[in-house]
Image (cartoon, rainbow, N blue to C red; front, side, top):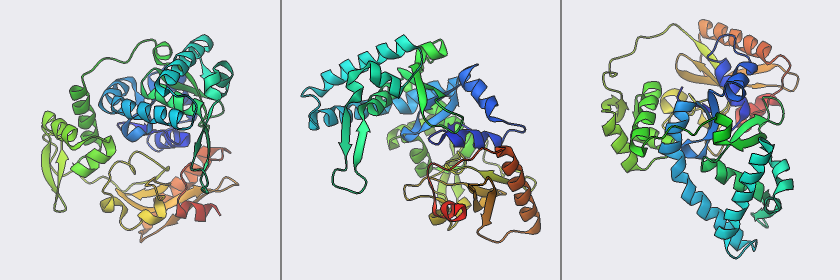
Amino acid sequence: MVALHSSDPVTVHLSAAARVAGFVPSNLEAALYERKTLVRMLGMRRTLFVVPLDVAAIMDEACTKALVETQRRRLIGLIEAQGIAKDGARWLARAEAATLEAVRARGEAAAVELTKDVPQLRKKLLFGEGTTWGGEVGLSTRVLFLLATEGRIVRTRPRGTWVSGQYRWAELETWLGARLPAVSRREASADLLRRWLWTFGPGTLTDIRWWTGWTAAQTKTALADVDAEGVDVGGATGYVLPGDADPAERPDPWVRLLPGLDPTTMGWKERDWYLGALADQLFDRNGNAGPTVWANGRVIGGWTQTADGRVLVRLLGAADRTTRTLVERERRDLEGWFAGTRVVPRFRTPLEKTLAG
């Protein structure tokens, strides 16, 4: 995998458990918070990922840094429009400086602690006033998000268990012991694309642009820099790494129960070849994948965990006896792996909600 999705903290652990024999949450926690060989950072499409440090550097340069100007301009506009300050840029610069100072003083700090130290972070932004989805968002959320996008702070340990999505914050350089290695935008883009093609190729231009969030120009330059080869994928052009166009050997029958937002399920934009007509049941309205059942490279159903800890599966198409046997084995193994921990996907889908009851 290039990166593990972390918008839902549960995804990281379940994605690892589906691929690593004997995996338990403490394995990932040790890599993230003790050895610090992995880091949780914003990356492609403003999405949170867990990645190794070398991937963090190229992801930051190829994707994240391009987000900074837009995010800063948007936040300044909100600050001014909602009467928090006439000069939003000056107000934000002071709030960021005070927040960084507070983070340094504490070493690690949760947002609730930082709002005690930095008065500016206690301000609220209003969204959707007069609508059913309207509400308030603390400026602490927006300021911390911007500082993280800029690569100045990083999410560290959660405030609760491994299923918690409320993290503490630290200065990135202090937490990792060094800055991320410097790399040029073009080199980083080629490296990131090379990793994606190795994992997900063949993929179309649409797939690549969606996954990375790149412009057409950045995508085409990166394809040229890695000497990508074009191949036919159902009448469209897909891309693979040089020398990777030969047919792959068919593996033995296999089944996996993958979590919502798993990197495989979210690896491509054009999904019909592995998803068929199941998108409406297994994805939410915003395109977020729910828990899926995979068999031999195709999605064949979904699953959930009930309130009493059971794992329930529903197959949405024909499956032979071997496949059903493998599905049941995976279901039992996952049920046992949870060991009493209850999880609910952050992005719930029609099938998952139906199964959960």
